[in-house]
Length: 117
Length: 114
Image 1 (cartoon, each protein chain N blue to C red):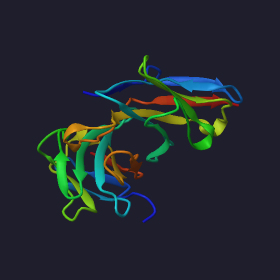
Image 2: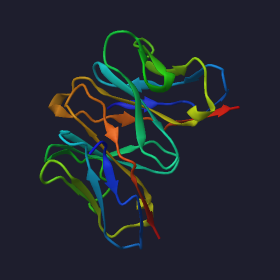
Image 3: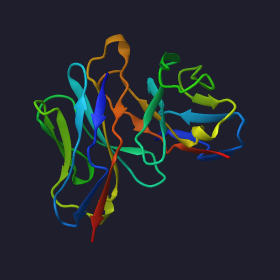
Image 4: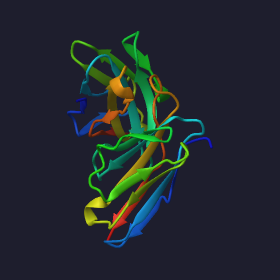
């Protein structure tokens, strides 16, 4: 079974400082990894994904994520945080090649990012 | 349409009432997912369609929950005899391909059972 752990319920950072939101995963075979952001009363908005290739992937709004196979991690990062980045962030995983055609993403519990002015 | 559309956005149901939640996926998207999101939690998988075929319904919490996608586009999630524990946001997502595409989410339907 696949799973995602987001060990921090909340991350606090000052505006202008770098931010990291942590994610570790478990999946059979090669992983297909995602980050989504959720603003209040909204659905999940896709930020970025990792399939294969370069371990550092860049996404929307200046976010990037680093894939580390040995640590089974996919941490979300941004060099300089903005107050407007304050939201809920969800990491998700699914197998890249699924037997039986099941390509269902599993989500973590989410991390609340709070950026202080 | 440009994105995944869900209706209604908000639904208040009396306990025991049946409800139907609608999802309009992005045109041409093959895969459709339903998730349930409780307050302060991540999305929990309910069911998955590939075109009109329901390939996985392992996440449906009870036989009161039923989903369909009869023509491979619009999907409906039905909850019979609603209970207070059914109160949550129900999210629908669609993706274009089977393997290497991400899922796009609708804004969700917030169901409150009173």
